[in-house]
Length: 473
Image (cartoon, rainbow, N blue to C red; front, side, top):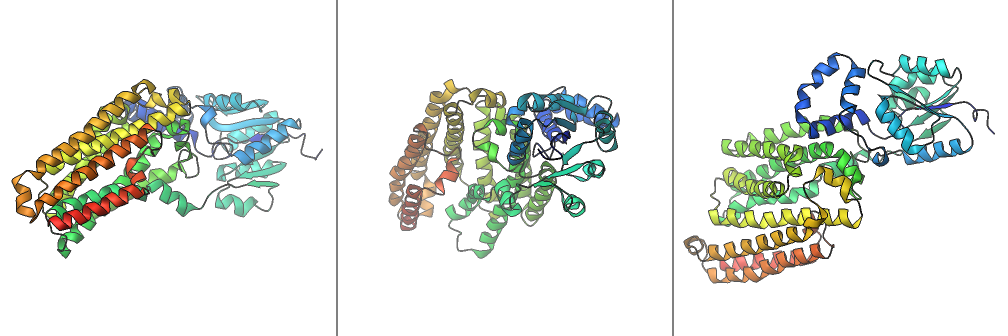
């Protein structure tokens, strides 16, 4: 047995045992479930951090079973526990969170945590430890742990900050670091693959046959990136609000913020930066485009905050957001998007939004994780068949609207050989039917547009459609 095997090992929670800040996660969960509490936060904070934590944690439940633990470090702790070493959970987190974690892991002999009056951090934490354990070892990760490492018999570092590695790196007996490359995490969080949806801003220009106009094209490019940075802003915001729900999801729990691989503080700083970048690009475009973009921001924020929890209204909002890209592209390029086209895209993207919800719900059902996630959604497993019916009907209505457009006078004005365009109908029918067939069989990604970027059939349909349009022109 080693010399330190009998010395109590005091373990920090946030950033050490768990890879994220549980208080921040609780705040986002609180704001999502009880938005009015945003007005109470300043008052709670004014009464001290201990009181703030008590008020927040008393209103929400953090599921200890789904928190992103540092698995290598946790395995080490379990081995120490099996060897008979006393482990003490010592954290500035509220005692409710600490007890939930301790009860779930069942390896700690005692729990020291903050309550409504005492914020157990820094010197206060050191005093509490030394009162019970004059000789102790300590596992932590940040500058507030320096005081404890100075007094600890054994230093253990878990995903340490730069200052911690510089000052205590050579003294640490164990260092656990599982952080992933930053750029890869950033790209995953911003989801540039989802920017494909924003090519819709080019459609008004293309349908007006202005694709050879360099100035118009550059306006569309600016609109594309303005919408893309706006979308990434909302993706980050949505991921922060969805932390608890994502941690229950079999795949979404691996997202950068839900998994704890990317700091929640970094996410909070990213939101205003991306927003300002998006608005900055829109300054070079007509005022109507900026107004459309601001409405898009408001709707997507409401969607992330509340609307996505409301059945039916959530998919209608998603379809409307797709249509706003077309409208924004029309304003940016000074071209008019026909009412036919807006109606067509509205029904088509309502269908794709329903595919997304259907696939998410099917995945939750197949993994037997339906109940926890549905606390954050408005659907139940029993709704699967009905969602499929709604989605299939919407997709066929979109094709029907397209056939009405082909009989309109607008087509006669724009195309020399408009009869060729009728060949697009069977291609559209094939594509939307196949999308729903794959979703029904459980082979569809929860985002059909992301699936389309890797689907050979989609590329074939797209290529044939372009050739048909060029022939009609």
